[in-house]
Amino acid sequence: MLRPYGKRMPAISISFTLNGSPVTVEIDPAARLLDTLRYQLALTGTKEGCGEGECGACTVYLDGLPVNSCLVPTYQVRGLRVETVESLDPGALEPFERCGATQCGACTPGVVMTAWWIREHPDLLRTHTIRELMAGNLCRCTGYDGIVDSVAESLRESGAGRRET
Amino acid sequence: MNVKLPGTVPEALDLLASEGTAIPIAGGTDLLVHWPVRAEAHDRTYVDLSRLDLLKPLRWTTDELLLGGLTTYRDVIRDDRARQEFPLLVDAARQVGAIQIQARGTWAGNIVNASPAADGVPVLMAYDAVVVLESRRGREEVPLDRFYSGYKEMKRRPDQLVVGIRLPRRRYSYQVFEKVGARRAQAIAKVGLAITRSGAGWRVVAASVAPTIRRCPAVERLLETGTPIASPEALRPAIAQDVAPIDDIRSSAQYRTHVMARVLYHDLRDFWGKRA
Picture 1 (cartoon, each protein chain N blue to C red):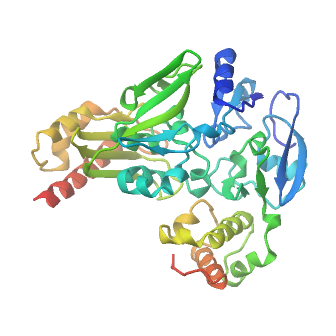
Picture 2: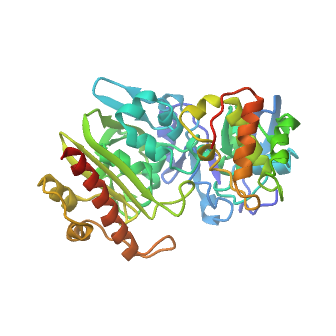
Picture 3: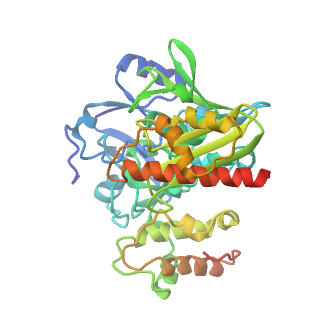
């Protein structure tokens, strides 16, 4: 574990479902889900950006909802379903490549996770714009138009109703 | 760091009573910010609330909306009736971080985190919310507008858990939530305002302009007179009695007072305009 957690406490053992498979890990009580995924379970697709819930680079699904894994103590996922960017269809990235919505790539795993969640829940667009739904994923390279276009394109491909930005 | 994992509310209350300084943790969206670097936080004991399923749902009765101790912003955003009857809850919830935070953050957590810049607390206070606290010693109810006694100081003993938030169902003739921040999403308020008018009178609640979220009694009294306000400046004496803004990294005291007067004035002008 790379982070200075201070005094180490006895590990606790927790089990949860990770990308569809059961997993059991011994964790430090202070472990964040982000660190457990990256440094214990070797799923490095999930990135750390700000580490305080602003940038969304660490977005994973917890029981089907997008959350910032930097703000989730790992013990809270016991018995729950966790899905990371590694679980997504590689095709999820294609609209982003086509629309010029990727550059350095640090934000991309989180952006794609949120975008895919919107695609799977198109009913949200009755009350929310794509921009509002994507507001928790910061990108410092591309500007946001390409990202918003990519989400709209992804929704069109899925056959979901369209509503721009 | 030590963590306790209760499965029921009575177990959680036992732990809070026996541990003395244990910190209840729900969605973690405040407590995990700066988590790894704040060494003192790791000598603490945390009581995990995430399995207390009874505290999750919000409930409607004939005369109340009851938010559970673990009801999230998202739970309220998705509730059609909340959108109709308590639209400011939905407005504010949609401005707390973004969907990743809204899925995890709880209303009760927003109250006990006690940030002067909270988004959830002002709208709850403008709806006359009552905080329901429970401990081994019994249940206590504290009106939210009397819950805070100073910066991060509140009427919650360490053995008490916020198990619910009661909101009376009323007919509102005016209600608005305003948040002035550096950007629309993921921003912390430089100034926040929640204003309601019902049979119970005006409620004007300000955020980020005092050590706590607070009602503005002088402004409320001015509004109760029913006299239209001529200009933002005409509000300044009342505002000066009600708030005590400071300079900090997000804004200056002068800017906060100026913006509060202008936002309040423009909202009220809209209100009087519609009635004319």
